[in-house]
Image 1 (cartoon, rainbow, N blue to C red):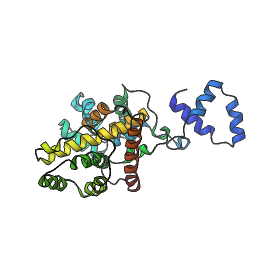
Image 2 (cartoon, rainbow, N blue to C red):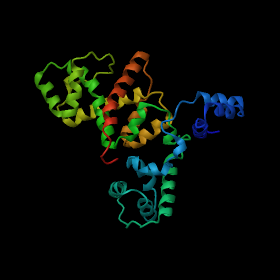
Image 3 (cartoon, helix red, strand yellow):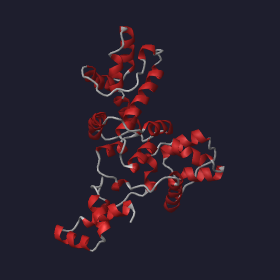
Image 4 (cartoon, one colour):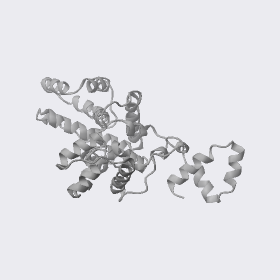
Length: 293
């Protein structure tokens, strides 16, 4: 039994009353019954239906499609682009230089082509759990944030690093310039951090040597936010990590995967997870209304 099948089976097995459930479990091989008993509750109820992988394509960042589609002949490229959503089409047409007209596809043809694209994106990966079968975790909320919201989340998380750095900056002018570059939300999140002791620190950003370019600061903060997120998600379900990285642009995802290493100190890891989960709460209360990519 595959991992996904086992989770779905357990979900159906949990539906009957306890006595009947116990009798049903007694018919299973001992080894299988033990595996079922160890399963945690799933993120959603798989008995209500499973989202097919190709239905998730709209949540993926457009950069993940480019290498697959770029290898296609012009006619085939137009055909596959026709199966994608309008936001993905617009960006990929621009990046891939597609000049051919798109096709008006019947639902069956669209579904077939979407499935082919999804298979191409997953051909070298492990067996993915359906979204509904992911183990319960507050981190699952990240999958339901739009792309701009994910970047905002990462940048806010980087304020923990910036709070440490700002305490080391002596020149008032440099401090004020840094604060002007930050968004209002970032300044609001940063303010209490400046009054607290940050127990978890990473390599210095050397902001005393910052060249004053806002883009340079933004790149540094994005890298620091990704570093905290990747290390705080160490040990998370592999399928969750796969879905999340496909929702990020390939550059950010590559950095996430590179930095996805364990912390030596378990207390630091707990603190980092707490920072991430606490930051997730406001996003959970504010559903996404932005474009996914």
